[in-house]
Length: 383
Image (cartoon, rainbow, N blue to C red; front, side, top):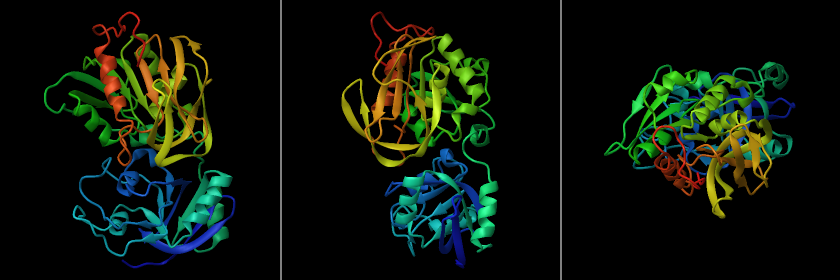
């Protein structure tokens, strides 16, 4: 692969020199960093990274190559890729190709040889910001002009851009137990795998679906997926979440889906300074008192009081999970309708499986409802 000089320019003017990695060209997006030491293929194919230039804090990337099994969607979604030391050749029994070649084949513009520690520390103190990566224009001032003209992530409505264009079905593994209607706001394949392992058949719907579309498959429950963009723009999914709760169907939301449900319950959302991205984030499950090591990818969060039951249109709601690094809300639990959320990724891929129990909790929520009306048994409020 021919390598050319390349530059990375942040919107505050700081620039880094390096070498092209992957496709040559120019790209723009929001610069974010992820702390995962493994799972780069899952990161690259996660739709939640749409329009983001991902900086890997792990110094060497690509040494296990790529394979045909670990993609979390049908393509790479990152806007650009930044690494320090790309492996010269992959070495793993599952590898079917080279990461750099795969990036080039999918048109992902990247840069290597960058001091990613210095870049991460800069983003850690200044916050996520717009960035450009170019191997065709090496003039920082010229690239900076285009960086500052690029759209910001705040106010970006992106979920429809990554959603499936038409409904599809992922069948249960083994005996079918329940049917779930999943709203695809940027769903990862491991979500439907986790549900299938529990006997759940999942019908995945486009982001713009209406409640009647979901009800057409007679779901036992509804799921709102992760995804990219600013939740303040997602008025359609918010209205859909309200419809689902008004019908008292069990509802589970992850990441972007958590923010959507938060808005449906009447809470605001806000943009984090640099977000949570990686597979080593500590979260407290306040319903059990246990601390989980979890996988994250979010730049927005729900603004809700931490230490009280909040009265909403749909009854009482409480914060169920918090991040122990910065006290950010990481989950909500409705007490009077069958609904709960988490802000992080219990499906992992990549990441630890500490939070895998949440899919069991979802199934238990379905089991605990009475018929299709979703009314919990008397006295049962644990999501």
